[in-house]
Length: 149
Image (cartoon, rainbow, N blue to C red; front, side):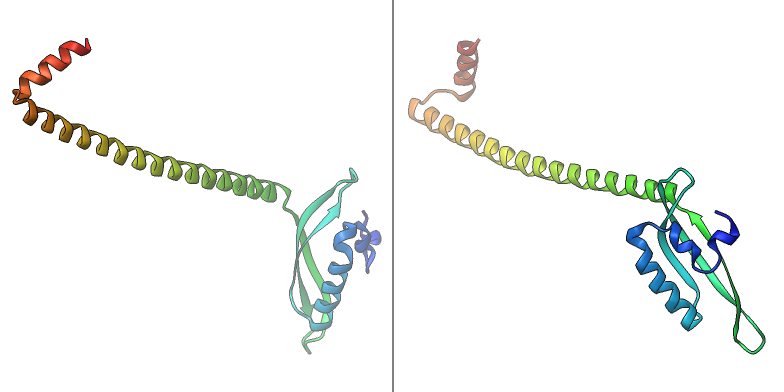
């Protein structure tokens, strides 16, 4: 667009329809109050697609404090937002993976405790069997291992 096309309120036409009314209200309030302008909105590109832009502006004042003109810039922040979206997605995936690892850790602790309990019970049963039979523990284990082969 040319400077003539965006002069005055012509730049509103380049805004995404969902952003236009809110941006216009915010801009009018900014002009009324004389505050700095900071706004994230979408502009229509030459290709017809909309691109996110960070708009920043400042009033240039006369010596008496009245606003002489506004100066500003619009930064295309498409790549920044895309990188931010990827970072959020990676962070969500990491949180999901961490939750899964935590559940696996809990399961391994349960299985470990169950395994320890089984081993303790087997050891106790072996001790009772040895006492009852009067067998030598080392000899009984050796015979048991031979039978298992």
